[in-house]
Image 1 (spheres, one colour):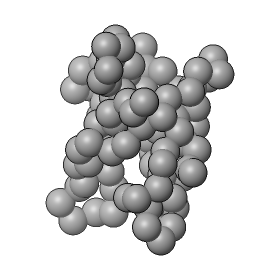
Image 2 (tube, helix red, strand yellow):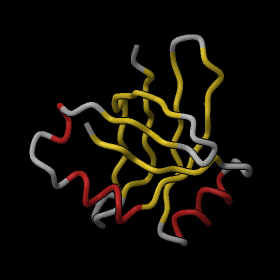
Image 3 (cartoon, rainbow, N blue to C red):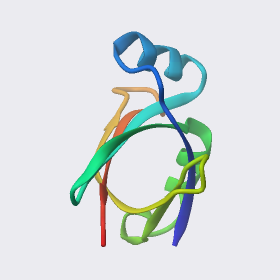
Image 4 (cartoon, rainbow, N blue to C red):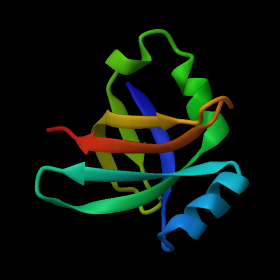
Length: 96
């Protein structure tokens, strides 16, 4: 089981997302199972290091927010940069 530490985003939109990526973070969203979508930001380097773990896609993921709220999720969609080793956005789907 993998734990990802994230922070809630207050600013949304294209310019806010670009500013996040400039600061070595990327925007993400948690949705599903009758919850209100939660917009979060994740550290780029920490997540890329986790992706190097064998069978990363098969492991359960827990997202830990600032206020000690946890979500058990799976990756629904992942958008990579075309030629840089960077993540642009990830959609997480809440599991039971």
